[in-house]
Length: 279
Image (cartoon, rainbow, N blue to C red):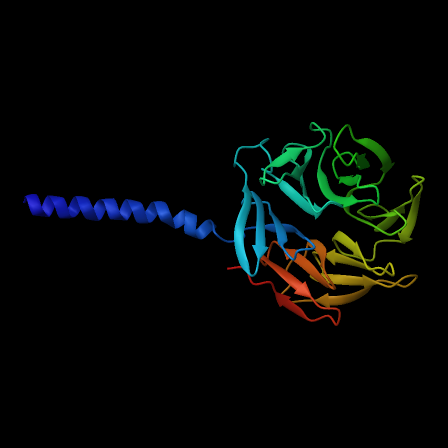
């Protein structure tokens, strides 16, 4: 009887240990990747809305850079975007705390605006190192000093979702307003870059050196290409893309974060798409 009791107790304890380990194993993979950024060193960072937090991919290995709390209004509880600043530090926008963060050398997110932004959906960095933030809630573009501080309104843009900066510090904005792509000049003038609404549900934008623009379109399951002075054309579309959202340069290639495919993809200049390995 004593032996039987001891064996049952041991088996029960092992089962509890196995159950406690399972969630950790399952969570060691991306859950809802929304945005992606690449450092000059080659490291890739992924904003995961449902982790919640930020992953790092280095040499094909996926590790947690920062895991936030499931409690609302805590840092990166609702992370939406990541981008690298001019100094090579990681910037993240979080709608739960209405804040933009810069990661310090220890991997800790440091708030920059004291909660001064509504819904930071995308961030670009100009030549001065200032942050240009698309605020979906307040329909504003904000400028945040490189060292942090009170945001300053740059422009009003209807439903801004994605932003990118060109060499002349013009800010290109994906808008869900009357015109899908607008451009905000350094003088704060809002111009039409792509007239009308050619996309189904555009999310983010990046620019090549020659100002060729690339735009993710979730509903069309596509990445569009817009040559300078030309019309938008579908560049890469269909499976394995399901709902492409995040977009960033990785040297000469493009990285695409797709939350519905639960993956990050890489696209070569000739349009060849592969899944980024993350084990």
